[in-house]
Length: 317
Image 1 (spheres, one colour):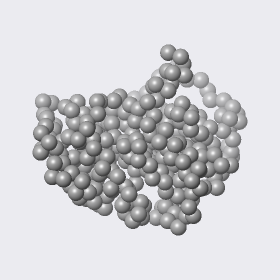
Image 2 (tube, rainbow, N blue to C red):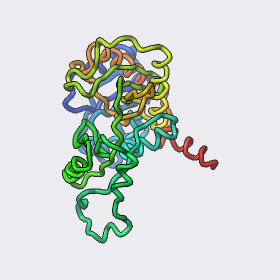
Image 3 (cartoon, rainbow, N blue to C red):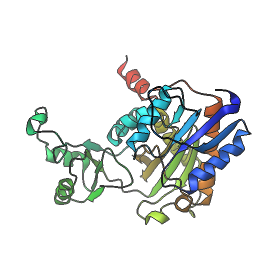
Image 4 (spheres, rainbow, N blue to C red):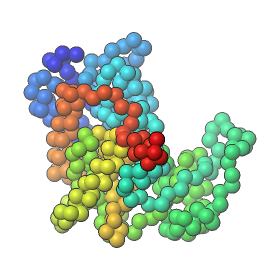
């Protein structure tokens, strides 16, 4: 692909503010050498080539057709942000395992069997499954706890439970989802942190207890510099370990320790009305810079981030 033909495609859905602003910023930063535009897809032929140096994915987690397209584009040499193969494989429980490997505090977490059998399974499909020792689970996690999907986002199917009765009532509603129980962190401060290109970090005070449109705290006091560096270090460590080039990390602070609450967000909120003008401007400018750099300096394909190195170095192999 010649320098003059390099294109960055954006794959997105119902968003309006972020994609168009990002396309304009890419065109400004590209200097005529690199241009941004919405991706155009019809049907996919198996021998097809794709005229994009880079694609930013904002929607394939909701549209499986797009996810397959992105895998095919990656196989043809397109740089895809974020990696569609790893994104298809990760989950929030495994993220807690990665957090421990990366040296970042996370709430105590337990993965639970499906409450109701998944489609096309029978009782005999679960011959390897033991009955859950609920006393052991509650003793490890404690109350209050959160019950939430291991594969999910947007606060869907999330329940706060103050006692076993509330837990079992919520668990009964979880259908065939893969759920996890997680320690509730009684936090004093909370931050949502953009991490772009595995090096650009932007701290945003955030309050998940507020109504959705008020959660980004725009009038928060300055963060003490040493603690801000700790937040940056933890957010960066998680995103590097996971291999995400666009991510948000949520850290809840209890007794001065940031706990990683939600940090596998490869298509994070970037709407102007939600994040506010200053956060939006940072996101647009820095994401454009990351994508233009990827177009100019392609990276070899990676299966995932650095977590395998962390795991196997610990195991001594």
